[in-house]
Image (tube, rainbow, N blue to C red; front, side):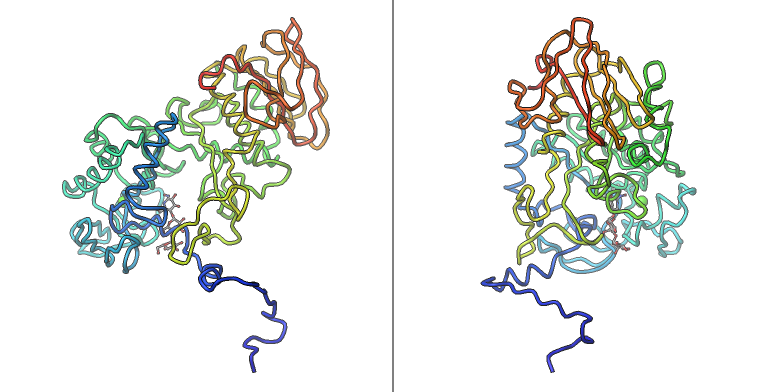
Length: 445
Ligand code: LAG
Ligand code: CA
């Protein structure tokens, strides 16, 4: 008897013709992605490569004018015991490779007893208890601060430009501030702080930028049409009513505008748009984020996943496989023509205010950015035909959303003639967008 399951319950056969054994094994294993959020040492060897490869990445990117912002986990260590990828043995509350011992952690139930974060309205509970059962580091201790500072300073010495501070809301701003101040230079930091709790964004936005989850939520509601008046609201966001005031978000100059990240794209119910959102909403959301004038935008680049837990494709040794853009589930959003071109648009328009805002239906909005750019978003199920008024100089402009390359000097997509009075006529298909900009104005072509 070879059938182990009831007939027809699990009876699909996959024929892996000519596959080597290690590949078969790798096909059916795969670590959870979130083990990355359970550090056991600060050794720069991981599934992603070793220290030398890390340093090469940083210097190669720097030479190309790209800074690396490293995601760093300072709030906690692990929930369990084992051996880390770089070979460090650990048990919960004991990490000899750092080293941390049991006295370096918070036990919020007193008498050496830990408890979980259970009350987001209680700042002490949030910062001194265990997030998801993870050993909670006592950042107020000089030894812990020193270890964390040494970790960050090591990264700075390799040339990183900044940090994404994971779980920042679960640490005291004063302790984070002390760590940041001890670093050479003033590396950029974007801190992960959820809205609405007792530990909230305004408590952190004087010591660095803050990831604005509220913006991701609003963008989701707008593009899914669950907040009917949202697109119309965009029309009211012209100076002097900036986005943070209208939407109750943190000020633009300290906001890291995300429209999705690894948590929000997986959450149920969704906290943001994700790659499965209907009607092009995911790419339209990214276009909006990059065309709007709020915060520092993050383009999220992830991989398709059939379950919450599943990690990126990896080999049989657990090393993450090289990225194959548009294959094996790697999405490579940063290479999507519309998104890559909107990054150029974003750089070109700089801090210019919104101009020439036009609302069609409540799911149709168009706005310019000074005399440099003009964006039309049609999040409606019908074509939008309109004569738009812009502040663009007269000339012929490429629609960069439908171009087939990202070279500002060539246009293989449709182009539009803007008249001497700044007008052009266009028909924008359902759930589509159009963007024109003056590449000459691009700060970073
Ligand atoms: C963050 N925000 O504050 C990260 O953006 C988020 O991705 C991290 O959670 C979290 N901090 C802790 O660094 C991720 C996963 C969790 C995972 C956690 C620890 O979203 O699902 O928890 O990392 O690896 C997992 C299990 C839990 C379990 C825990 C401890 O899902 O059920 O309690 O591990 O074993
Ligand atoms: Ca904490």
